[in-house]
Image (tube, rainbow, N blue to C red; front, side, top):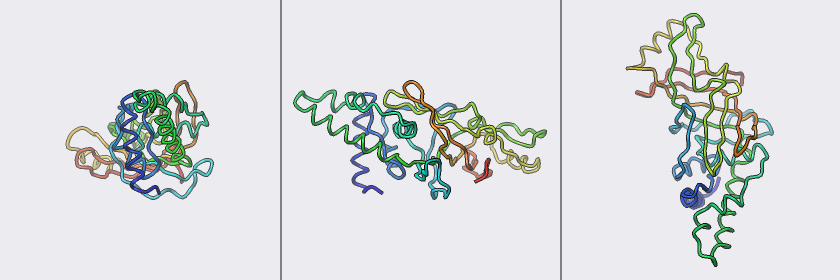
Length: 252
């Protein structure tokens, strides 16, 4: 665990990087949560937004490669750095350093020292995401109508074709769900389904608190895709934050 002072210093570095499309990335775990508040570059999600999720203990089984680290609602930069670490694609540090405001707008005699400073911060942040095998992510979604024939609701945000997009450092990383076909369905008895539908004041907007296990990374031009399996999630109403259920779409 890094000292609190170091987290504050690194968060300040992120703010400086943001204005030119290059930001210093946050650290994993608690550092990622602290630095998320300092993010200055707007990022996008596909059909989902990301409010804060409650933290929980790191799961016992290790992800591929013996990875046991966990990120909680990582920001845009963290996901770009994590992708490079997972895919084994060298991060374009030289480009990121030159795009940093502290280098771009530094006086000539000061540029060398500024480059060294920014490069050291980026290298430290890259090292901080190593060993990450799990992601806790919060998504907003809309619960489908209940299908009495199949006895289930459907969650579009977890469909096999759905991704969550992270844009930073002039790159884009998508987060996909390898077991989305199973994860998107929530099977419940008809009687329980009626109780669930009666829990909403209007509409069926829900919040999903997901535990994801990283399984692969797929390179692409100027970014790539991180593939995960949904291990479990909680479903809550957006209005009132009422717990509707807990789902485990695959064996632990």
